[in-house]
Length: 445
Ligand code: HEC
Image (cartoon, rainbow, N blue to C red; front, side, top):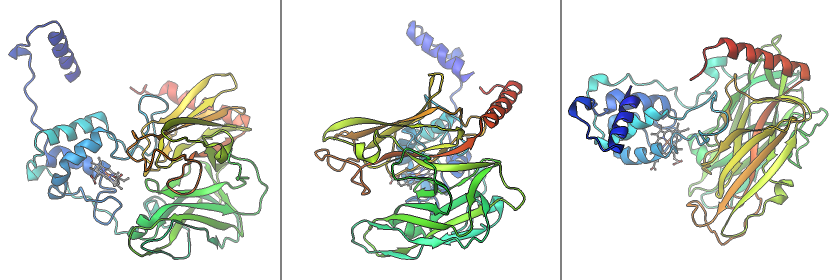
């Protein structure tokens, strides 16, 4: 309805008619904090913007939020907050963990700020959300407390020190094979988050290797187990799929610490939730690192004052379901795309992040009904763009040549992607199941 009115006004303006009062809609009351804005902040912001969480300020009460109104308008309108930087115009658009704002939520926030950020009637304020005391595990509410927690030894990052890469190996203590249905990983303290640039956890265990990605260093076997960076905390496996841990397995941590002007001691905690015995899943998920660079890490070549494009490919030797897309780049990273080239020659964009923000490592997890089902022989093609010009506000020095490396001032370009491998028959079954669902379901708008 509102749309139709807007169109009338536009048409009126175009053909030079003046819009009469009779046509005009009654002016809508401006949004208020208590009635319109607080529910959005509770649903989309408080998980990070509350006391003792990861964001710099709390957005729980009107008094806390009001001073940030202009900054909130800017970040929300630019779709930088909440951190969700997938391109909304191309590729798959349904995700299991979408935390972005709907257009109308953005309008509400922007109109509220434009109207002077009024508080509104106190009676409209929704009840305060109850957040668990830190530190609590997120998935404990779903699965109960984790079955196993593996901790890296405590490490102290000095106030002023070079970046450090800490790689302790910790036994899991498992004496029998178990299937994993969810994993969480985090620095053990709020302060620890500040020094932790990222943390990887590899699973080391005795089994035959298989090349599961285009990473030259990776002969995967179990593949990478879990990866942590700001914006990501854990993952839940899709129904009937999991990761297999064998007796005697070890976790090989790979933690990147950086100094923040204060001595901070922390350790990384990895929480593992098993499938109950007797409920083992049918499919195994493998997390791989896929370079968006031809020739792997050595192929990255970013001359001074330039915008570059690199590409990497991976041929799927078995059919599979692509579970997620998680691009990883540093300060010059501008965007990354994942495409599937099917054996028919047809090419499909699966996902594009066109507004990459280097301090957000979002993991875009596809919703069940759209996670791509791809036949054997599909080529996964990854394209990355870096901006090493002065137009990039995060660029520390556009006169430097930049290549691949671990430091934040070096670059990378890869995606972390979980693939659940399927036999050709299983792929067909999954495709049939999906067809049945989409033909009976109400068509999405
Ligand atoms: C996943 C966690 C997370 C969510 C969800 C989130 N934020 Fe943030 N926000 C952060 C962090 C961390 C920062 C500081 C780093 C940065 O700016 O990226 C931040 C920064 C900001 C800033 C800039 C503050 C400044 O210094 O100027 C604003 C404004 C903001 N957030 C608003 C919001 C709003 C509004 C929402 C919800 C609609 C939201 N954020 C959702 C984590 C989050």
